[in-house]
Image (cartoon, rainbow, N blue to C red):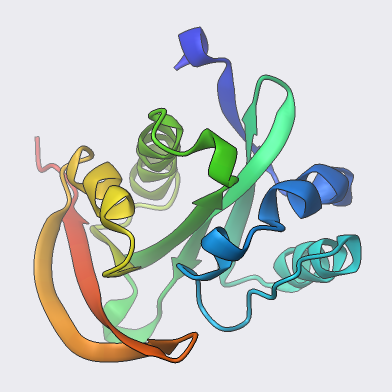
Length: 171
């Protein structure tokens, strides 16, 4: 997506200041797992990046748009009988929502998962308060595998969790 000036870069501490700015959003926080704090500070960003750099079971990339790190996307490797599966997780700053950026970042991570790691199935878990995130997956060929009813408790509310997956093309 060169016309958008979008790329994925392996996460590094140099991304921390920009990511801290874009992550500091209560609305963003409401759609992410509990380890994601709000307010989000530079120290949170650095702690997250350092944990990613130590984790050999995943690859995390900064989503860089117009030369600024505006979010992250992670590919998490599974093991044992699930070793050909990967889970993706992602977020971008709220001011960049609904511009096709997440859709393109997912496309890029799929290419990495399939070509560099030989994975067969990629999945993502989406809270029901994030329909735009589900649409970004669907635009990349993901299908809804199922719904875990009221599986998520976030900010005093039970939410459904949607499980989406996509199989590698066999062609």
